[in-house]
Length: 207
Image 1 (cartoon, one colour):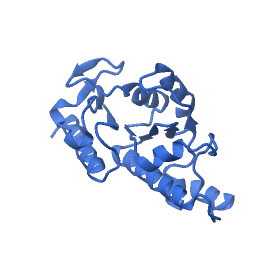
Image 2: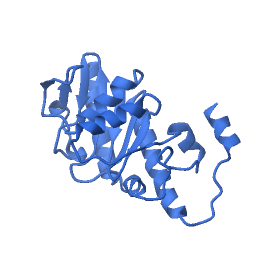
Image 3: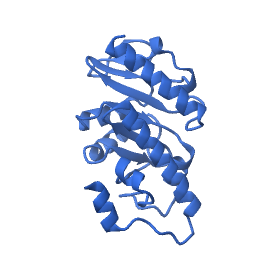
Image 4: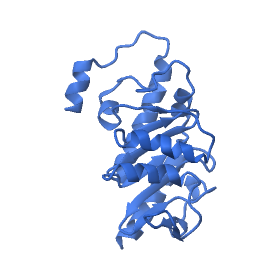
């Protein structure tokens, strides 16, 4: 199996798994991978639970569609991440319930949305900035992502959902799932006295 064929299969397996576990719904959410001659992306208006390896969009490095179905309408979010993060090999964007719910809260810190609840969140996500709201498809959203993508591999779009880049598809998936679980914990703990990790514990984990 060629590297591209393996990447196509990996994207579809992840999409099916994400959809089956209720991490995104309908035709929301999208996945991409960097390949030797461009990018593979999930198509627009297609459920992640119904992906076909042969119909994934293949894009050139400049974003031109080379083969397959038209890419996700949010392809610009993926390209913004890749362009600012040379180490990124995959990007996952979901409309996962708890992460979206947190992105709608009025009392969150836009420089770091979620507190350090668990060690795995600190190690896999770290700091999570909030991108202001833009209507779907607005190119200004890509510009806003670019301003933070060089320093953060994960961002949360206000009233929309998370975008996470990883050094591999499995790394991106693990990080966005950890983010979603931490968002769920944050909502469960909201309004309760909570023992977060200390600054010293966070520094140790990041070190």
